[in-house]
Image (cartoon, rainbow, N blue to C red):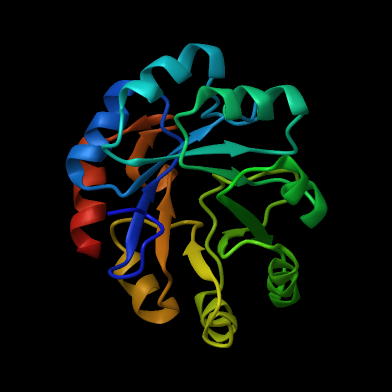
Length: 212
């Protein structure tokens, strides 16, 4: 069953930095894994080193390449790898850039600075929209929470998109977040870590258990 299929709330574990953490997340029941190819991230992966083991994960999970304002060379590396089910644009990419990149399935992450920022999501020609918290100079992974009530009010009025909720989710609050927002999926990175970039097996299991 794909991360993008309708049904129960899906789970994406993002910021995977090792094959071990990938397999921990898969065993715990993750629907998708995110691999961060943005050099400014504390969870950065070198694509040349990581793609071989990401490819070896096969069809056990949907694999998402996460990029921020990527250059064509990186996009071509991701395309030619042939092992990613989707790409996630998590920077300041314009709608035309995302379409020009030419990926069949893509997610646009929108950092919500204010309620009006959510409106910009509708200018992107993709059904897959991720809402993350805003922090000046940061592209995700901040641990900051969104205003779930505002997100819910927006999501309820839009029926033709799949909304993915990110930002400050943990085992302690994810059920409440889902009850309020009713997203298609949730996305977590730091909320299942004790040290940035290293997933904690117990937290991954408990996070997914709380949702199921």
